[in-house]
Amino acid sequence: MENQTVTPSELKTEEFVVNIGPQHPATHGVLRVEVTLDGETVKDVLPHLGYIHRGIEKMTESLGYKQSIFLTSRMDYLSAHINNHLCALAIEKAAQIEVPARAKAIRIIMDELQRLTSHELWWGSCAMDIGAVTPFFLGFRDRERILELFEQNTGNRLTMSYIIPGGVMNDVRPDFVPKLKALLKSIKDYRKEYDQLITGNYIFQHRTQGIGVLSKEQAISLGCTGPTARASGLSCDIRKLYPYDGYEKLDFKEVIDYGCDNWARYVVRMEEMSQSIHIIEQLLDNLPTGDYRTKLKGVLKLPAGEYYQRVESARGELGVYIVSDGGAKPYRMKFRTPCYSNLGAVKPISVGMKIADLMANMATIDLVIPDMDR
Amino acid sequence: MKALYNYLKEVAFAFVSLANGLLLTLKYFVTPWKSIITENYPDNRDHPSVADEFAGEVILIHDENNEHKCTACTLCQMACPNNSIQIISKQVETEDGKKKKVLDQWVYHLEMCTFCKQCIDACPQDAIKMINSYELSCFDRSTLTKVLNRPGSKLKEKAKVTPKVQE
Ligand code: SF4
Ligand code: SF4
Image (cartoon, rainbow over the protein chains, first blue to last red):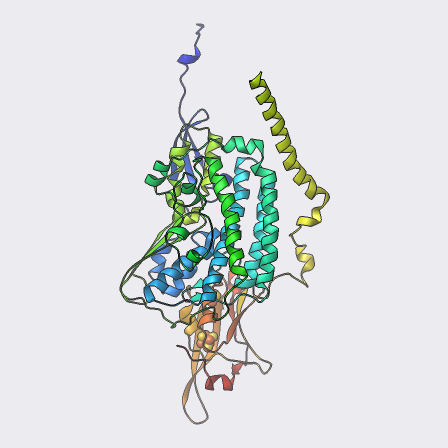
């Protein structure tokens, strides 16, 4: 046999395609990511969608306006209240329905609580993707207490269908305010635990700082919104830019970070949790009394025309575009969901990184798959 | 020298930060009652901590005389987004010879219900409500289709005279 000597530079490496998902714990749902790898380095990322496509936009065309609300809770199930709020706002704008002050305040409280639950869950799962298990339990524990409050006041835990055109479905319980006050106090304590456990953690910092850099230009051209874009220095908080339901009267900060990396996205979300608590606290002390909803007709009809409404969901700008032909059913209802646009950022920030960083990148962008597929 | 100092400082910081996190774990290890939110589920069945408001399933309210308030107007059926409700009515003749529509079967498909409470909202008579039942699993899907009006039940007379005005 002939003896061959091969120098390392002559060694040929081959690119290797790995499928992550659709049933992979790190993708938080049925997202399939086709990753081209060279060794451990990511060469290409190609997300495949459609595994949880339910045709929500098409289904709304056969339902009335009031009935479509319940479908929107199933898009981004981690911010169901905000999705309901979006639909309710769009319909109110089109039909020119006045909403009582109490309903507006309850809506904002629910929205911000929902943002808290969403970010708490994200905190747990993000840390788990990076390799820590304890935060997952802590995140779920804290989310559970808020969900209990939802259960007592809205009747459901995950898909509420609570915010409806004209106000909210039912009034909150009399003990809502004291309970929420106690809850907010404990959430503040939990925030300290989060910092103790993860924010100050050396390994976590090194896994996130300088990894997954999304420049402001990229964020704009990809249409990223929400904390993902705000961590790149882009001011895009709909609550500030196009306030709805009384956000303009509240004092809160738009959290912007210029770090552009995973760490910046982490910091933005953590700070947003504090801002949410701050917003709720302002409303709690003088929750308006009076009606919690305007009674509407059984069958709601919108005047013919086109309507667009946007809100700030936990993941970014959520929009709905309604085309009405004057009938009881929408002619077309198109949702602009934040996760779909944010998904585009996965490829530019991951190419050239290691495969373990891809997981961290996907975690800090906070993808919710049913929100993309609808 | 400076580089070595920085390196050692970083190593020390790393250990401190890890110990800090472990301290929290240790705290919960020695005082576990501070964070217990799970429930001893089958054991606490007789005093479950489910909120009264929890939307578990739809029921038709019957009073002690086995009377309900449903006039078979089918508004709830029309409000339901996924056809979980079928109101089957029949024509009966009253004593004075008039034809009248009464409820025959109030069919509720629990397996399709999304607990959105649109039906409760739509009912002008407040004849239905949601209760907080939670052990709904079963082996056969067909057992989830229920007839909500009890056998022999009839319409409460007074409710017909004062229907809630809908704007
Ligand atoms: S709760 Fe909703 S889905 Fe269930 S029966 Fe009532 S209207 Fe239909
Ligand atoms: S339950 Fe209420 S809405 Fe439904 S048919 Fe009976 S009276 Fe009408």
